Image (cartoon, rainbow, N blue to C red; front, side, top):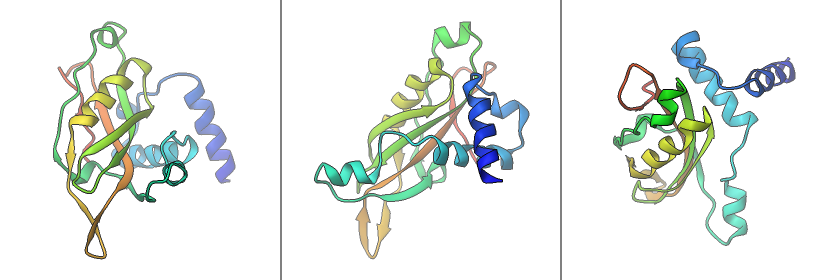
Length: 157
C-alpha cells in the first residue's frame, strides 16, 4: 500500500505544480508535505555533512513552529504574470544559534523556489537544545504563495 501511495504522489508531481492550498485541508497538506520530504530527498543531509568532516545534524522535521523572526518572500513578477501559486518546501540547515546557513527549495513551482530560498536565509529560528547543548538542525520550512497576496508567507499549522 505505501508503494502505491508513493507512486501516485510521484505521478501527480511529475504532471506539474500542484496547488495544495486550494484543494486539501490543513491536515492533508501537512501529510503531503511530509511525504514529499520523504519521497524526494534534497541534496542536504547529515550523511553528506559527515563526509565533509562536519558533525552530524539532528533532524527537525517541519520547522515552521520554531520561527522567531519571519522574513516574507517577495512574490516574483514573472510568477505573478504566469499565475503561479502554491506551496514551496525549502530544506534548511540551522546552526547552534538558530541562523539558517544553507537553504535549498525542494518542491513547488519553479518560479517561486528562489524567492522562498532567499526568504529562508533571512528567517531566524529558536535554538535546539539537546542534553543541555545547542545543536545544528536540518529540517524544512514550508512557504505558501497566493495570487491575492503581495508576498508569500510561512505555512502556519
